[in-house]
Image (cartoon, rainbow, N blue to C red; front, side, top):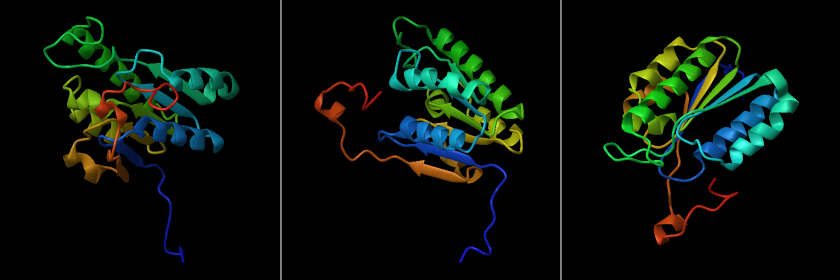
Length: 188
């Protein structure tokens, strides 16, 4: 049935949309890649506070040693023109996003990693912390054997053609809309 099919040397995967599960899907991808003995870089934009994935990655890093790299960048949630994330200025948010992007670019172009996950990068682009041309640069300049994964809301529609797998996580219902805060272990 699949005689005419082949595999690609690397792919670009996007998890976007207003539904829950984008970071969770990327953690699943991380587990699958590590299970295949790949080298993985997990570069996280936005989330600087303690979340479940940070503890998980920290706990498995001694097992995977040089096979897993984790970089936590960003300064928290951002709203343009307002002080957000505990009095962090717009300039501080932008500087942190630039630094995090530089880590992602270095990881993607180094040839060291089979997979580079850029968690919440779509939010950083949508919020104007980094330009959408940065996504294109990551795609075009990555090492030929490096797959990319971009997560976060609002992936630019005009770049969908540059991806290989794009999933739109659509919210059907979320308890936040009923004024309930996020639950540890479920939402973060």
